[in-house]
Image (cartoon, rainbow, N blue to C red; front, side, top):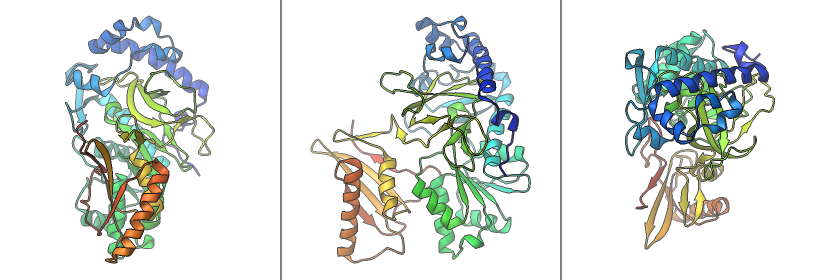
Length: 433
C-alpha cells in the first residue's frame, strides 16, 4: 500500500494545485520585486511589474535567471531576506568562476526537509527504518537535506557522510540499515565492495536506496538493485532551489514527481527560450514559489528532460519529470556531433561494463578526439590481448551506432580508475575551446 508524507497536498486535485500555485506566485513576485534589486532590475528591463503577474498563466512574462546571474550577483545580490533572518548557506562544488552560495531562513529549511521526507516515504520509509545518509555533509546539500528529511519521517538516522567504505558497510550490517542515501556512483562502489566481501543480497539488510546528485542510467539502477537486493529510487534537486527533494521517484518509478506546491516547472527551447508544449523535450526551468532567503525565479537548470501529467499508479497528482537526458551546457560537441555522456554510459552498461569509466575529449591537429577508458570487472579481466582487442572493437561499434562517430576505447584493469566518494568525474575535456 502506497504511503504519503503529506497526502493532502501530494494527492491534491489539479485544480487545487493550480490555485495554490497562482496564489503563491503572485505573492512571490511581489516579494522578489520588493527585496531583490538585482531581479527587479531584470524585470524593469523587460518591462514587467508585479501587477502584470496575476497567475501562473503569466509566468512566461518574467525574465530568466541563470548560473551567470548567480555568479554576477555573488554573494548577496539575490538574497531576499535580511541576513539576520538567514540561518544557513549551502554551496555548489562548481569548478569555474564564483561558487553558487544559496541562503536559507529556518522556514526554508523546514520546507526543504519536508520535500526530502516525501522522498523517503515514497521509497517506503517509516519511523521503523534506519536511514544511512552517505551523501557528503557540509556545504554540499545532499547530506543536510536527506538528514533533515530522515528526522522528519522519524527514521533512526545514521549520518555517515561519504567515504570510509568499509565503515559504511559495517554500519549497514551492525545497525541493520534499511535505507541508503548517496550518489549512484558511490552506491555502485559500495555494491562492488560488498560483493568482494562475499555479501549477497540476502546478507544485506537494505531494502531501498535514494540516489541522486548525478546522472545514472536504468542499466546502472538494475545492477545496483541486483547486487544489493534493494529498490533504487531517483531523487532530483539543485542547490539553487534548496537541494535534493525538488522531485523524487515513487514506487511506480516512471519519472520523478515535482513538489508543485513549492516549485513550478517549465520546459523551454534552450536556444529560443520559448516555452514548449507539454511532452516536449527541452531545458527544465524552475520557479521557487515560497523560498524566502533565495527566491529563484525562472531558473534555467540546463537539464534536458520532459514532463508528463499522465496519471500515476502511486496516487500522487504532481507532474513528473523524466530522468534528465543530459545538460544543455555540458553536452559535448565532438566533430560537430552532439554527445551526452549518458549515451556513452548506456552503451558501456549494455555491454556489461557496470564498474567505472572515464570519457576523455581532446583536440589533436585541430581534430577532436574521443577516448573512452573502461574498467573491466574482475570476472572479465584477462591478459589475452586478442580477446581485449575484440571487446574493444565491440564497444567501438556500439558507440558508433549510438553516437554516429568513432571513439577510441581502452579497456583497463580492475581498480585502475580512481574511485569517487562524491560525484564521479566522468568527463575530462582537455580541449582549449
